[in-house]
Length: 232
Image (cartoon, rainbow, N blue to C red; front, side):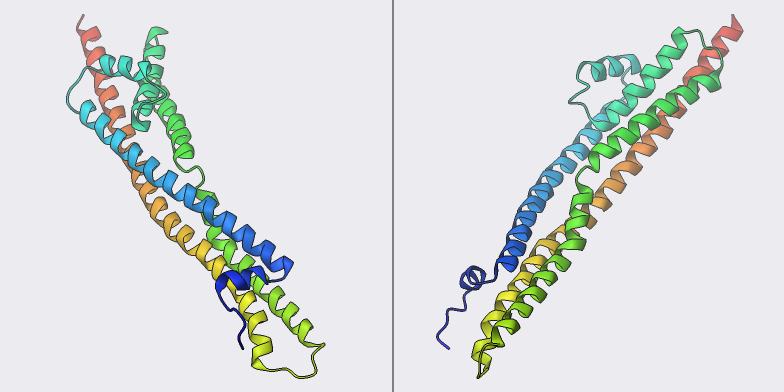
């Protein structure tokens, strides 16, 4: 009854398979925390950049000036700014080719922005599936370690002539540590996944709204140009 039942001792005295499971879960937990912090700061930066660009866009600045600025720092610009740049670039290219159909101009700009939107969303969602996998798989991996550890403990008891709670408890406790580590890895990953998925949905909705609003601006621009050309 004087056996050391600390967590560290239980881990060190566990069977090899259970130790491998624990090491894998701890490594996975560290990786998921790295993803969590990276995604937390990354989404915060994306929201701030989008809000800054949207504020500048609706301040009434000339679209050509905004496009020139977006083209100069495309790698560090906001996702919404890159959406704007892709739509504006396609719109200007079609105009340079003397495309007169207003529908073709708007469809081309919209398609360019939609393609850019999908690329930006893929980037923003990167590593999110990893958190989902950790949250769903880790408890089962921990349970596997527990089952294996309990099986190993009972096999060891087969050689004993007298079995008591003191002889069973250490082996079962060692096995249950694997389940605890599995939950320790899974719970933060699930909470973070749900939080980030909600934040990404809001960002995606904000960018989709911008696509529609900018398309309306381009439509008015085309209509005004056509009216001027007709008056001449």
